[in-house]
Figure (spheres, rainbow, N blue to C red):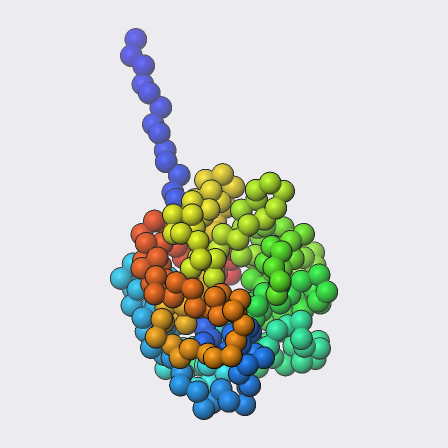
Length: 290
């Protein structure tokens, strides 16, 4: 009697979401007390150069990503928006002028997210389904913002970060996709964290990706894929691949460290990240039937 061994079927590797928050160096929230909005138009912009670098990196790695783009940027650099779409990436909204959702009234927020959506859709020629609040500024005190987004035509948000942070965070929130306002509400897709010793630790990019050794960032994301069996959501900014950006004076040591640490290493780390994991757009991973 012959015994036929069962065929081993390997499940495909988990795809993670690669996301970019499209803003320039002078628009980051930490610089708001030092750089007035009135001065933005007079400052040297680096965003086109940096997006070109990112698009080349993604193309070489055959990675598609989601670009959460400011309406302010899109209005001034329409060709940038069209390049993002032409290369097969998802266009999503980061609001209009990088105002925190928590600093706006419901009416102000409605105008902000509606105007940015229209600008992006008119330029990109595709529906804008996703939104990310500047500085992850949706949390316990303003969950009403998710209903505003739903009524404005968005399908998902990636605006709640389930960590403890001095500027943002909702550590009580679920670590993976959920509906904060019920099944009929907006889908929330939190930035990735790892649960350890009853606490959530950041594992989805940003300044932590520049601060941590790459090997630690890789281990954290692998843990999410292998132990939690979940897709990770990773994010970074165009200015993080730009060590030659103009340096700001008269800022505190914490702000200086957070913004400038390891800028010269980010691009190579991103290249390694695209080699070590599978990546795709937010909509294809989390809204496959849309």
